[in-house]
Amino acid sequence: MKILFFGDIVGKVGREAVHLSLPRLVRKYGVDFVLANGENATHGKGLNESHYHYLIDSGVDCITLGNHWHSKPSIDDYIDDAERLVRPLNLLHYEHGFGSLLFEVNGIPIRITNILCQAFMREEVEHPVVSLQKLLLDNPEPCVHIVDLHGESTSEKQIFAYEFDGLLSAVIGTHTHVQTNDARLLEKGTAFMADVGMCGDPDGVIGFEKDSVIRKIVNGQSGAFQLNDEAPMMINACLIEIDEETYLPKSITPIHQIVER
Image 1 (cartoon, helix red, strand yellow):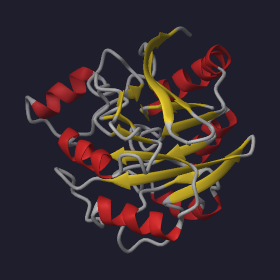
Image 2 (image 1 turned 120 degrees about the horizontal axis):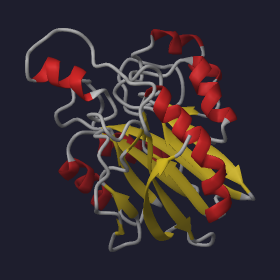
Image 3 (image 1 turned 135 degrees about the vertical axis):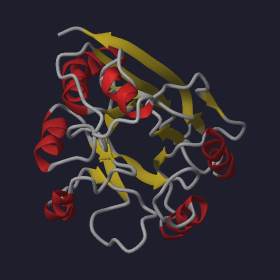
C-alpha cells in the first residue's frame, strides 16, 4: 500500500498545485490513499467549506488541520458533516468534528490522526503524548496509523515519534512550511519526517508574497501577509509505502516538485 502526504496547502496557488499534480503522482507511484494538510488552504489561514470540497473533489482522501483550524469560523457550520476532515485531536473545550478518523482501502484499515504540538505555539491543548496514548487505549485494533504532527519544534516532533516508535505507521510533521531532510524509518519501524513542507509559492516566504512579509517583519508595518495568486507552483509531499501485513512502512520518500500550469 502506498500513501501520498501533501504538506501544508497555502492559498489558491497551493490548491491548484495539488489539483494539477495529484492525478499524475497517483498514476506514477500507484498511490492508494492521499492525505493533505489544509489548514492554510483558504487565503493562507483556515479552510472554508468550498475549498474543503474542492480538495476532496481533486482526489484528496483526507484533509488534516493545525493551529489555524478555526481561522475561518464558518468551519463550525460544516465540520460535523465533513467525513474526510481531521482537526487536532488534543484541542481543549471544542467538541465538534473529529480528531482521528478510520478509513478502509482495499480491506486495509487506515487511521489518520491530527495532533497539535505545544512548543512555541499559542494554543492551549492537551499534552500531545497523553492525548495519543488515550486514543490508542480506546482504539487498540491494529491498523495503518498516520499522525500529522503539527508544530514548530523539530525536537518536540522527534520526541513524540520516538515515544510511539513501533506503535504508529508514520509520524509526519507539518506547520513550518519548510521540508526537512530527515525522512527515515526509526529503530522500531515507524516512518518519521520532521516537516513534509508546503504546497504553494516557492519564491515567497512560507508561501506568502515575500515583500509583504518583509514590510511587516523587518519594517514593522501593519497588515496581513499577502498571497500572489499568479506565483509559480510548488508541491512538497512524501510517499510512504506500507507493508499490508505488519502495517509498518517499508520506505518513506520525500517529493519536491515545481508544477507547470
